[in-house]
Image (cartoon, rainbow, N blue to C red; front, side, top):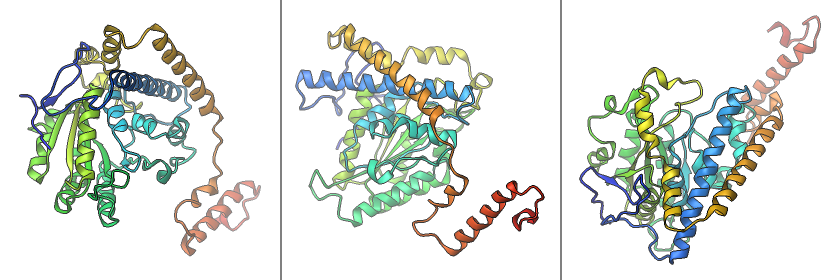
Length: 382
């Protein structure tokens, strides 16, 4: 597997102007007919538009008090859809708290994402069913989980066998800020030492909340992989074709038993870190305007239109589908039932322990005390 790239290390197949370019080591559409390739690109476009609509609606819901928080992905749609669509069914994903586009690709109901940020559950999807782990809020911790899971795949004999339906890999997402965490560097060490089948996918959106990438690393992040002994790649994270091609090849590299790869998707967070953040306090609006010209959705739309691969009816259908999704999200979010307070004890362990049962009983007494007008219950005096 070759890992050479251009002079700046950036792998690109579709320019911001919507023009296809060639790369010596990576290509999109290999083995596909012209119509199959066009259909796949139209599918990418649809995924990105719907993912952006999810992000816009969730942000609006938070502003209206329906969500406690929302982690925006505006501008990072290509990085997430490209990576998400590169996965095989048997691959497993460990996300951060921003991988809404990857969740979409894995078939997670968007309302289950909203439920987490509304506080009605801790993530309502089944990780085993979707091969998509629950969101991780602790910065960088998921990279260790991913590496351990990948080592488990090795020990289960589901890697490097040559069986395309059995060999699996793990995709671990994190951001540029998380690259400074000890957990991430420890995960790199373990993955390299055990040749674990994991692809570390860093979405470098250039801002670790309010800290710019220049304060985080003196070299491009993908070059750090060399110090741990495995390949590192930098891809245009606003180019869904290149992101797909690079991630697909890195995952196959891992499935074949060739070990880990670090993929740095070079992109930009056009929105806020979360809805509690005000990016105007620490970055220039001119930077945002420049990156709007590299919008990942716009470049695909230009490419499809210019080459006659999609007509007005297609774009109208996608817009109508996005509008329908908006209605579903607004109505569905408000209709999410409030959880029963004691239900949080039901999912701590597979089997209830004596200690957990005692804690549940104490909390039940405490809740019951609010119905006691004189506060004479046992819990009321605690």
